[in-house]
View 1 (cartoon, rainbow, N blue to C red):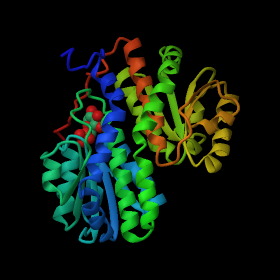
View 2 (tube, helix red, strand yellow):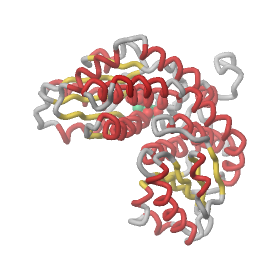
View 3 (cartoon, rainbow, N blue to C red):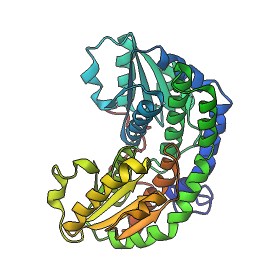
View 4 (tube, rainbow, N blue to C red):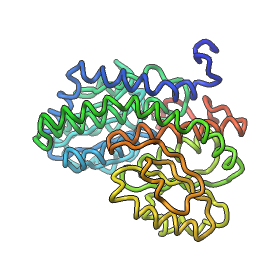
Length: 364
Ligand code: G6P
């Protein structure tokens, strides 16, 4: 087992560190197959597009919906796969569902696929396991090439899903004319750097995360707040922290924090802000949220692109470098994964096998 961990003490850490390589493999795999074109054809012919998944895969789905609106200019209906019943009475004959599942076996996501197909819908699966049930039952599959993920908490599969899903949004955009061929080529060339962005996110945070984890290890609650693309990344960050460290972490859209969450904030309450592009639209708004929290005595932390250095009232800052909107997730997410990992280790939890959790949930 030690050899399989490649010299790392845990699979989770090994899998976090593998991200630059598996992002590159996912990228080259997508570029050398026709998977994106097939997915784009199905989505282009649909009047309504849905996206579903469970856990981390659902968060990747939220990133997809964000980029579909921004890049492909198509609204997407997102739902957690166990909630598929809400849509069971709709006629799906002009709809497409993007079903995201790392394992391809999660029962709720499979049920959503079956329910959708039985009412005439077409399904695009996004999965890491060739030949698994969800890809088998779908009309086409876009594969992530993350290799086997052993740690129960998803890490490398999340960012490879984000890469595959962003590529699908771009492929649809060029298919429908929202992007010109030249713009598409340029964007895909940019995505090639997802791997470098992940390396930068890891390198720039690895030491600071240690300090941050020492100051957070004794906390009972943590808020993670973001805006725009930062919202799904905040959800994923909070999920990672609670899964492996058992510290209660809750994510909210920053703008929503005054509608409830702020009531809990008192001296030293840790609030982590996710800072992503477009900075010209988001930075000022996030500044107000930082100030609101600071005024109640919160410890304010920012994990974000370099532009967020301008924020005032921040106690601790991890600068992941400056990246465009489509590249920011790869730089911003690894510091959160490393933070969750460090907290687990400091608190003597086994990050690879968190209590009560299974890698794949095959019962409803
Ligand atoms: C379980 C795992 C999570 C995963 C979720 C969905 O809860 O512990 O890490 O995100 O299932 O799994 P899937 O294989 O469908 O992506």
